[in-house]
Length: 282
Ligand SMILES: [Zn+2]
Image 1 (cartoon, rainbow, N blue to C red):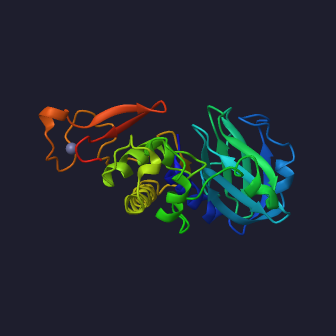
Image 2 (image 1 turned 60 degrees about the vertical axis):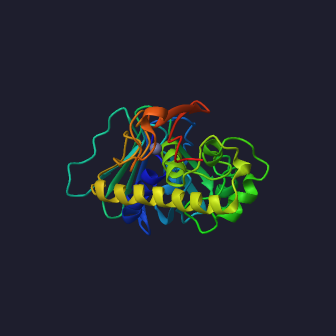
């Protein structure tokens, strides 16, 4: 499943083709993916200019100059294909759901084999309080995501900190891998009740959440240079993980009593795997 860093990378790739450009042709091929795609979507974009391209959580939003916005979620397998004018023309297959062509002759195709994605039209002024974005917590890479804010938000929450930072109502886009990695870097036990962390621990955690995500975006930027096929099915960028999926192995720079604790532990929290070092994380 594409996670926040991958969506960010896809969006940056699309922005260069879409921002400020007029869409001269649009075609909807599939009336229903996860949602029923409004028929008016083609009319909404055709002959209109793209005024804004941005990401919120794992949604991408394209603001058009007529007061409407297109909102897209890649679901499990959604991708955007970009076909440049000098390339072989677009030939549709059953997994292609929506096509836009810009004034520069670039064809942008939304493709989603498993159809868990979302493609919808909203009034621009209603996007932020829509059913998609209305309930979402803070952006992890924004300045507003601070230890102080997180401390206040967690004050009455006794769920494990790992699940708390994966709760989209608290902070968006911290996927399962990034949560384990950020907690390891912060030396915080993922099982601890969220409201037992003090502000200095949360300062470290917030810093590490940001750095893990930034690192992934940086990675994505360098591995996904080819924007003709942006998005993907790998879910996470190829990254080096310190604890994730390393059950039983020594943790990085391990000085722990490996014999006694058996290396990195895997537990299940909220039906997701968590990986951590019992000795280093407290
Ligand atoms: Zn260890």
